[in-house]
Amino acid sequence: METVRTEQLCKSFKSVFQLGPLDLRVAPAEILGVMGPNGAGKTTLLRLLWGFMRPDQGSILVFGMQPHLEQMKVRLRAGYLSENPQFYPSFTAKQFLRFVGNFYEGWNTTRANGLLEEFGVQADLKIEKLSKGNRIKLGLISAVAHRPSLLILDEPTSGLDPLIRQDILRFLKNLARQENVSIVLSSHISDDLDKVADSVLVLNNGRVVEYARASFLLDKYGEPRLEAIFVSAIGSQHHS
Image (cartoon, rainbow, N blue to C red; front, side):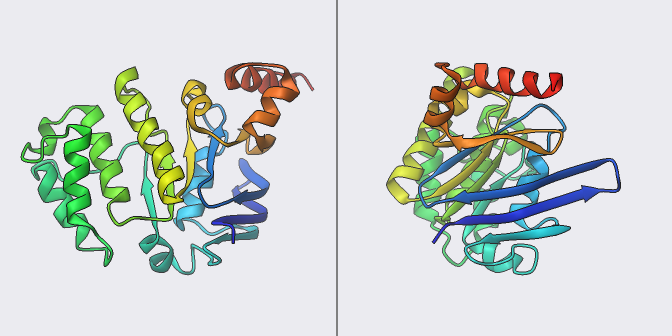
């Protein structure tokens, strides 16, 4: 069964903006990269998947459930990291993970502590003293320590240096391949999606510009990288 399935999904904000209609399928172990300029609807889509919002039209299923109606069941099996994750700054990294772990039956303390070490995040340092890169890594650890089957990430590598981005992307790719985790990842850094995305959804003004396997799009546009496809697809829409 697909991890995520949407049919003619629409979400409107008064008469100012509408996302959709969207027909999406995300399979186990698949990484879907979501691209688009600011205001394209990327964050809205991720918030719908997480159950923060209800669709106005169409349907959305995560693990066969409607996330806005069965939030707790979905969230016990999924992980979410927003672009600007909130922490308790006076907690140490280890204290924060222990706190988050209270909300998950399947929380694995050994895994959480192992990931702190793997990512080089100082367990006993207060969060307010951590660098931005290490705070994002901590957020990512808190989203995966309960072994979710779906990971929803909103611009996780934004503003990070290339080496930290590389660490995070390598981790995500391994997570998908080795643990069968579905990942929906929004990013405006097309370089990152080039490295990890199996499929790509390009949004502009809430509308689908392209949605296909990354390899298909590269062939279709005759381009070696997704950035050129993004520029071409968005540009052609503006001129049409």
